[in-house]
Every structure is written in structure tokens, then in C-alpha cells.
Length: 372
Image: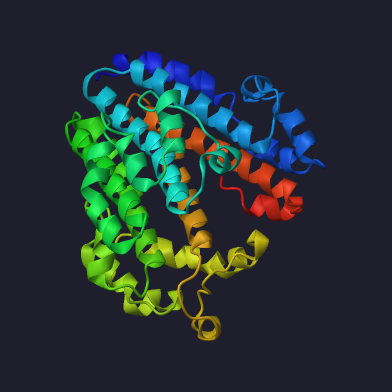
């Protein structure tokens, strides 16, 4: 697409971005006394129209309503693009819908019944997952039946191919990883078809996202055999070589990163993020367990544990990259990609704040769990 082709989409995104919550507004939100006060304050912001549609503004229903609104925003932006950029954004939109599929797969694997899911999961719809299909997924008796409800969608084939592995291992991660691999490979192929400027921008943003997802997966699977872990990586190489992921699998504690890993594109980034890792980990609410970064602390707590502090730090890094898409010349595909990534992050921050406020976590700790 030419610069002129992006003018309409950029104008729409500019209007949408002007209404997004600032860090200052988010801080004001978490400093109020209760969830009810937070919801009242949110009704005065751009998300207020969505929240006002709800008769029962429970956190679960608010989350579902905000995600439905984001799905509609995706569709409007996709329709404003043409040719190869539209194909890329459409495949990015599939990744958003896949979040519903993966969440329901996990719940069905855990044995959750339909009514339990309706009470615990923020149900919303997308273009290829309309309400009737989502309800069939919710009502499926087990994982295999849920996969059958997806016949006719892009999600069906990769999940069907992965079912034997699920049957053998009884690990739902086999299915969710297969879905991620399929979607990211399709997205990467669409990115490769873009014109020179768009391709360079999109490859860097999506390539880094894939890299960091693979790095996090390797950290989560530390101690696993390489042959087992291989199935969980997205098979797209950008700046992270396979031997780096293998080396991460062999780490006993995160303090070994500086000495045991070969140098790779994110060595400096990971090392800098680990400086704040322990401090962030100790602030996790609900007593969530984490793996200490230092060798000394790790001696007292070996084994696989939460990498949430690292995940939060990497999300902050990606936010910085996407925010950079709005600097300088904005007539490229990075602008709609960045807007939707940042809008999804805004919703995650809002829902995290609401859930932590409901749990009685104080404002200072809630702010540490926000990702800006």
C-alpha cells in the first residue's frame, strides 16, 4: 500500500489513540477505594460506553465486553486496509480469536463443565467464532469434542493433527503450542509478501514477538528434554537460534544466563531485565512462586517456577517497540499493528487492576503489576 492508502486508517487510529488511558489516569484508577469506584471512574473514559451496556457489571462481564469491543476494533481496521497489508492484519486477528480457543481447551482439559466456564471465563466472539460456535465449544464434553466444533475454521486442522500427541502425553500444551505454531507461521508468510517498507517494519515487530515467546517458553520448560521441548517452540527463526533455546532449557537457575548461554540478539536485554527480577517476583500477589535470579537464592529454591516477572518485563520491552511505530513517518503497517497491541495491553491492565483491587491488594502493589 502507498502512503495515501494508509491515510484513512491512520486518521481513525489517531482518534482512537487520543482516547486511550494515560499512565496518570491508570494510577488514578487504582487509587480509589473499591472495585465499584473503579467501575464508576471507568464509565467516564472511552471504555465507559461498553461497560454501560452491562446490567451486571461484574469483572468477568466487563472483561468479556471490553474484549468484544477490541474484536470489533480489529475488524474495522482490517476492513480499512487493502491487499497484502489486509491479509497480514487478518491473520493477526486470527491470533486474537485463538486466545478464546486456547482458554477453552485448557478449561475442558481441566474437566470444567459448561456452567463453571460461563461463571469463570469472559466469553466473547470474533468473526470466525460467533456466539453459536462459542456456545458449542463451551458445551463440548471434552477436548476432542471441542476440537470437532471448530470444523470449518482455520483452527481445526492444526488441532486435529496435534490430537494424537495430546492423547499420548495428556498435555493440553501440545494443542495450544500447535495452534500458535500454525498461526505464527501463516502470519510470517503473509508478512513476507508485503512491500519493502511494510515488510521490514512487520518482520521486526512480529519477529521479535516470536523470538521472545520462544525464549519465555524455554524458560518455562527448563529441565525438559530437548526432544520434548521442541514441539512447544514456534518454528520461525528471527534473531534467536535453536541452540540458544536448547541452552536455556539446561539452565539450573537464571543467574547462569551471563555465563552459560551463547551470545544472542537479546543477551543484553535479558541481563538488564533480570536486575529487577527478584524485586518484581517478591511483589507478586497471592503468594505466586517465582524462580530467584541469583545463584545464591536459587540454591535454596531450585526447580521450575513462575517466570511472570520476566514475562512482564518482556511485555514492557515489546510495548516500547510498538510505541516506536508512531514516531516519524507513520504511513506503514506498523501503525495499525502497534495500536491494536497497545489497546489489548490497556485492557489487560484494566482487568488486572480490577481483579487485584477485588482481592484487596493495595494500590502500590497493583501499580507494580501494570505494564506500560
